Amino acid sequence: MNSVFNEYGIYKPIHAVWEFIKDIPFLIKCCHQRIHKGYCVKDTWSIDHWFISTLKPMLEDLKNDHHGFPAFLEYEYWEEHKDEIGLEYEYWMSWSTDENKNKLKAEADKICDQKWNEILERMIFLLNEMDEDTCSRQNPYKEEWYSFHEQFRKKYPKNGDELKSKEEQAEEKKSGSTRMVRPSEDPEFGKEYDEISEKMMNEDRKLEKYREDCKDEFMGMFSKYFHNLWD
Image (cartoon, rainbow, N blue to C red; front, top):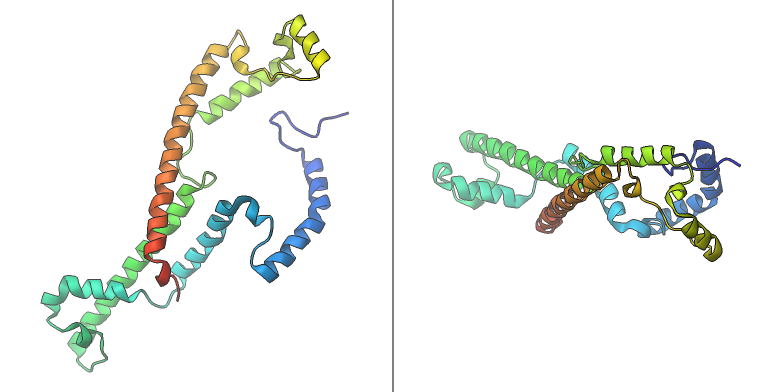
């Protein structure tokens, strides 16, 4: 009987289609829950992923189709340029027939709108970066690490059991448990695999810190602009 997995441990297409068909009743239930509750039980399995995948397109829509910007941006602009503007804030914000004042105000509004766009762009960027799947930084050693596993599977069709002693195989048969053999146990490329594994783990730690820093920066911005995310 053929395995339902390929050499990378991924479902073969036919099996994946069958699994999808079997999941249809559950997916319909999830749609019903989202309509009535705004989320479904499947979303709770990975709330972080749900948060990113839901909020990112919302922020993109807000950036691309907003009709204004937070009032504090206009106040900050006035505070920074009040000497050259030469007007009190209340008058600066009020309607006026003064063409020169209105021209200055229109230029300020354009700058504030651009700043709001930049804030939203930064938040969208951070959402992408804090997600492992969409992060622009990837581990440069991952492909090489996977290639060792591919070589290992081709060389040892029995998942490395060929490297076990007869005594170990007999003990596993008796106990019913199986030890997973790692590519590092291969005498041909085991040392190289260990070196790549160490490099990959070190890089993974750096990437995790980078994504964590992006998450912290995003949460800081999300908290700061929380009450301004409307149009």
